[in-house]
Length: 554
View 1 (cartoon, rainbow, N blue to C red):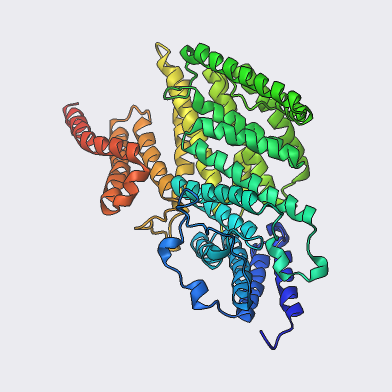
View 2: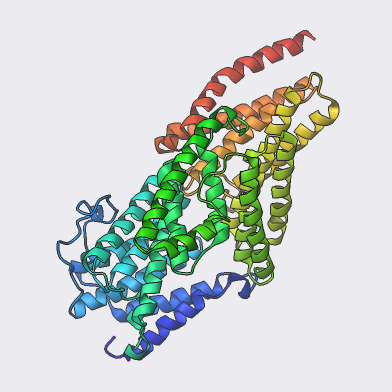
């Protein structure tokens, strides 16, 4: 780096950041990641110019790389250690580059490489993670690793990273307190560095995101009281820092409510629990009023009033019936429409898709509260109507992960509709041919999209992988299980066709059992489905043999 002016290194870094922010749709259609790859090349140049980290900074035991819950277990330094001297300063700058390389690889759907760079970032900063210069970058790296592991359905690992970030923020604010350096300032001239207010705003945004992601993790883990607490904390911070996101909040509040209320195999409300839940709500409201009185007493009533004004629109209290859920739905849909108006697919492909998925999520949660099964079917139909066009518009070669998400969601919507139609038919004495045809059509559509999802996992030679990546393992196994079940649910009067369907169903159940025997780690991802698959592998051959005997006698 001695032969290259520092200003030139900084210019390369800033150019990389600019390229990283370019929307995918602004790249050539056949090269949607062109700007990302260009940014990556510049970051690699800067990394080479900085030179390698010293062995003392880079070569740390791998066992130290993962997060461990609890401040003392994390091995936090007794005192804040600032990165002083040229060796430490180079390590911190390298950590900034590793962080941006990690995010870059994740953006281009190279998750394993992204994880590797983020872990390197943590390793370089570990000694200084509580310092004014490094705390923000360290928390951002851990947050990104938390999101990455959450997307892989490894929720406990995601939880560990995110809880570690929360603990670090708390300790830093207690022991240091001043707004920390933003990572990008490492490559800015002194006169362009951020003000204290700007630093504070950025750091608080990082922490608010940390709380929001923790709420999602606790929701996945069915730790509902914690999830509700973190949802409320997120809302409060968004209001305090003027960064309120009503769509996220409406979906989050409504989704949380599902898990507080028992449901049967087709997701109906357990009406017997309503009085119990209403009593719990009264207790929560009494506690709120107590907090409100204390706030007025100690002079913080205005903030409480500001929060209450928003909460009156989007309450963090879980809805208990359809009318309450509908209020949340309508408010969320209002903001969805506003977002769709701005994020048109022609200019904001990724953002537009996320908004459509949010809209679909609102309908999905609202359907849970609807007691009329026909109306619930119509809500799932609305979801399909908004999602299916996206599969036509997107090139699967360049939007592979997004396509997979949408295909899986559409398949599941058809799957839910089929179950609802079967439940409706079961309540009729003599279902007519129209209902039977409808059930089979829904079955066929669900099979189509599950198969599209599974086919996307095949290699260029159309061969299904012998080892499924951990980021798609659970969805792949679920798709296989549901395909097996769908073939077993096809209604036909042709005995030969029914036998073929049973054979296909058995083949998919057997795939799940065989795969989990070869890869024991997969069993914990689908414990319930695996047990049912083993049972079906045992029962179906006998059923098929009886069927063949019956066919031979007729």
